[in-house]
Amino acid sequence: MDSYVTGTAIRQLREAKHLTQAELAEKLAVSAKAISKWETAHGLPDISLLEPLAAALGVSVLELMQGEPVVNRNRSANLLRSKLYVCPLCGNVLHATGQAVVSCCGITLPPLDISEADDADEHHQLTLERVEDELFVTIHHPMTKDHHISFIACLTGDKLQLVKLYPEGDASCRFKITGAGVLYFYCNRHGLMKAPDFRAAARHTPSQKLHLREPDEGDREQVMAYREEFLAISSRLDGTSALDKYDDFDQWLADIRRLKDPATTPAGFVPATQYLALDEQEHLVGMTNLRHHLNDYLLAYGGHIGYSVRPSERKNGYASQMLCMTLEKARERGISKVRICCDHYNIASAKTIQSNGGVLEDEMFDSSDGMLTQRYWIENR
Image (cartoon, rainbow, N blue to C red):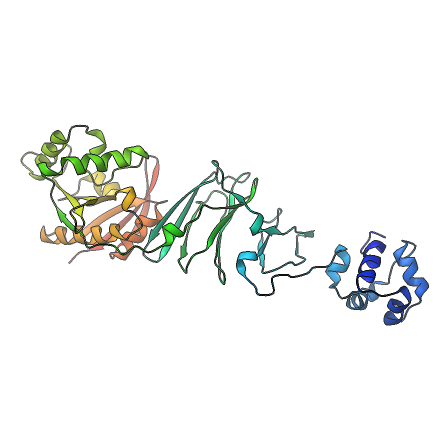
């Protein structure tokens, strides 16, 4: 009787419709005895009767065969009450706004109820960064064939954005910000998880107009506080003339001043100008470094410009503003074609470069840090 439909399912569905065996038999043009046999596992309805039997019981054929009705209680189609289905064999991801019977690769898939998703734990940490009207998401997680993130989804009340991920790829993506919503992702070992509230990252804070100037003795406190903010989270201080290696501000200031003059630039280095990026209240927001020309290493991996935005000031569009102003400084020095590089995984930096006219030339592996580097050119005339 378990071949394609069970007697128990027929009986339960019949009783739920308040039908007697005789009434159901009349609808199907069969005898009440036939209905009794089906329900007691002494016979099977002919396969040709499955569709009219399902119609008489008020369910789909799939529901009849599954043995339980599907009731969509999300009639308003609120996407925050969605169901997601993931096939464990092929990785197919399907979405429904309510309860459904979904099968793939011959398997009836259980629904993943997003309202019951676990909170992301310490093994599934995310980095969220807003750049203009996009949210960049990176999950720090293995991406092997046996253990990987299958997808990342951003749900608002009326929109679903879903990015499918694959083993050996990057666990990162970008979403268009369309209002407050919830981020979900699926680990093939640990199931569906909910990201921390990203509304703070998605909320637009009007950025202030920045200006660049070279550091001086009065910047000691701000510069060293900037350094400590990066070191506290083990973040790289790009575009700071190796500030992380200095615990003496005066020595750092003396060294960057030597680097500016070709006559005093140490062997193995190129002349460069260090800038502070300050807001309208003279608060240090970021740093940018302009190399006056390139050596072989900078041509391959470093470029003319390096920059960083302090962690507490990110997600306000400052990086793009800083790069634009540094390009102006480069034009003043006659640098008409600017090389600029970023790590392959750093989607936010790539977006910043592209928004300032950067054209990707290629990607090259940097053996010094084990990173795949994206290499751009910007026509700077």
